[in-house]
Image 1 (cartoon, rainbow, N blue to C red):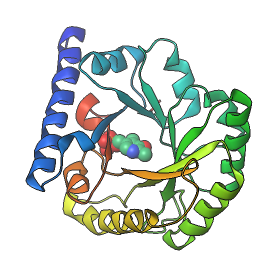
Image 2 (spheres, rainbow, N blue to C red):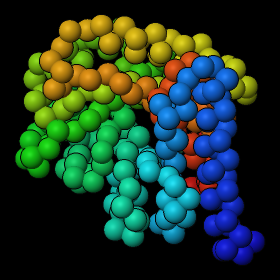
Image 3 (tube, rainbow, N blue to C red):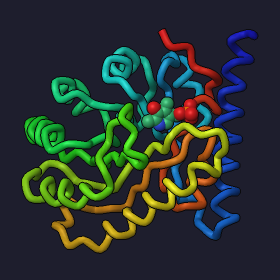
Length: 239
Ligand SMILES: *Cc1c(COP(=O)(O)O)cnc(C)c1O
């Protein structure tokens, strides 16, 4: 396949995902504009990322700090999100490059993000990652530990604003298999909105859930940002 054809495909697939997201929203009575499609770009090149940005993508998700840094300078201005597990010693490298960190799962990480944000003179938006099925292989916290972590962050971290939660359900054969996990996350998210915490540090308006295989189900269950990789860029070749 020629490069031109490949790029055309990326743009077309991105637009198609946007349309499917909009249609899913309309079907369940939501405003399509309340849901963002994030293009997940791990393993893909800066050129490919620029194609999706030209096609209208505003938000890009990367899993690994190193990969984000390798591409950052070559990618057009866009909102970068860090969606993978983040080691504390790497926070300083991305603090001035991303608009949101979706994978906060410990006070230790929150403190480091807070420290680096303060030094950079910014407030970092973060999501707390929930490990819905308590899988050993995944990061994230148990649902029952959410309130304690958020309360502690809000009490201690002046340069963090908690915006909501992120969840990754277990790998499944059918999109419907993810629904109970999405529903559980949405319930937690609604509960969160009732918590009385300082607004400057706690503003729960973001529910990050849904990937290529199940994003329409996630929209039906209340997602505000879906993270779509392979349905836009094709299969990944891990190096
Ligand atoms: C890779 C990844 C995605 C995108 O997965 P696809 O199935 O390719 O759409 C979404 N979220 C996270 C956290 C990821 O690591």
